[in-house]
Image 1 (cartoon, rainbow, N blue to C red):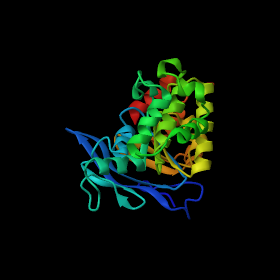
Image 2 (image 1 turned 30 degrees about the horizontal axis):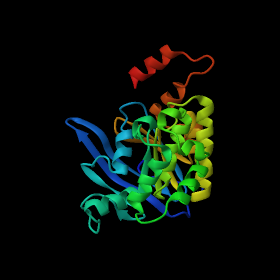
Image 3 (image 1 turned 90 degrees about the vertical axis):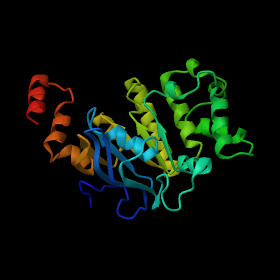
Image 4 (image 1 turned 60 degrees about the vertical axis):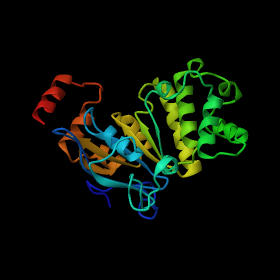
Length: 283
């Protein structure tokens, strides 16, 4: 059962264990409520989309889940454990930060900004592995990771600027997978790619989820991406969840006017941007 404040994601939502639970998140910047009482659940191996326009609060929610920002109120639990700094039973210091980083990883829209331009792909993966798993020989694991994302030894020796956008995003995914996270947060992860490359990356992500059982949290404005790769979706507007449910159900029969507006805003034959603008003002 899905409600506006709780979504069980995944094809086996009724039986799968919950890997991520977000409870009553609040985050304000001055008088602006960027995140206002947001709650949802993600099952192991599930894929949950968070959609909304710029300013809806979806990216702030994602950054709180990852730990890049702190919530004013609320909790983020992984396998039932509170991962907030200072939470009861949470390790502090470097060891605690690394442990939390291994639980949730994030892939950003522009991988070029998150990769060191002076470091080869293989060296970047080796640094990540050495940080989280010191003392081991990581050569085999680096080969496995590159193979998992469809790259090889040629890319391992390359610098980020020598790779295409799609290849760089594959590297970013491999680096995130290196620590074997329970949840992968993808923040507009294919928005900067050509349509054909988007399809390749989305197919890759589908295969990885099938192989590993990792949970995906997709942050996007693209309803086409949501339709293709998520089991469930929540729709955010002005920091709040306005609608949630199984993806196909929400997109086929949206109940909230804002969700209908998002669907109607997708260009198609007969599309009238003036009527969309008028509907937006009325809403």
